[in-house]
Length: 135
Image (tube, rainbow, N blue to C red):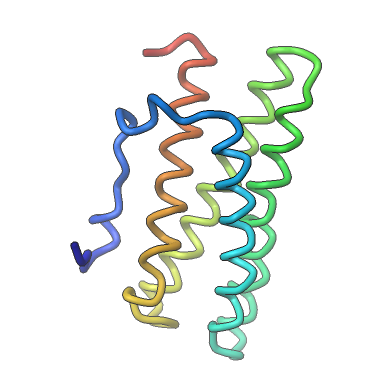
């Protein structure tokens, strides 16, 4: 299925039920690697370089902060670290959306990474909600 709009990438929280910790560790690391490779395709303009720098920071932080969250000493610390992971994933999603909206790259070039960022936001949002005692 080809998606034509950013809104087509909304991942559902119900899709997050069977995600395992080791799978998330691998996914976040792969996401970071894909971001590193992806930014090379951005234009070398002022806008392209600025977004590339921000995206590399947030995209690699998703993996680093998730690894850190797996080594916490308390539930409170775990919830706090997951909140940081969620923020970084959401920030990465923002930069990817801006790349498409500003027409720095076509949606077809961004869509797989955009979809993965959206899925990570949904997954970590769902986990954070569960940790806070939500549904």
